[in-house]
Image (cartoon, rainbow, N blue to C red; front, side, top):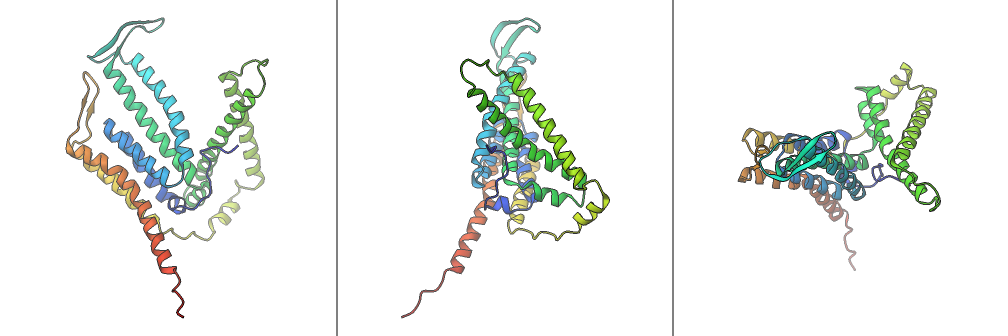
Length: 310
């Protein structure tokens, strides 16, 4: 059973781009999600990630991120409502909890929790598209001359996340097939089995790397002497899109756009500059894919054979 986050080799501009270009492209939308709290801008950043994921063929990864991001977001909203006892618009008063005491549910606390949940959802979706579209081996080769051990660690982590998700899916399927007479499998049991399996896999991976000599200096010299990979034709488009997103975000912040205040009352800025910046994010995300499609059509037109004359 293959996880939706696992990298799948497939033709596409994002898959063919260099890891640095893909990281700059997807990371720019995650940076926007961290820099702004305006729900309109956050929704636009999420729409941009969805455009990139759908154009790159990462629909299963987006569905996985939406499912788990939604669960995490609901938990964040509930915790924020309980912890943040602030806001002027009280929706529910006098809700008693054993340890916390009286809890007043306010509209402002709900809005603040919703903003945090939306931010997490955008970042999780960006990471899901990255995990499904960027080859971890290429990331290792690109980072090996700079930070060999860190690159190997990052590559192993990026491969371990899809494996853990696949293990969880197999455990759940096995739990459903045990029959009605078996004791129900709890989440704690799933967590213990996942942790135990991850530790076993880590020990096996460490032993394999040790046997292959990844810790020896000679291995590092031989690995760094490889032939450099040719740059993809799509690198400039994705790098330009990422830089344009960051520059637009910096300009919007400098102009005071995208403001949002939760307390004491909700204040959201909807001036034309904010709306223009939000509308531009999905368009910027679609530009590299549109250029790649236009380039592909041009190649097909050039290679089309001439009709034979009688």
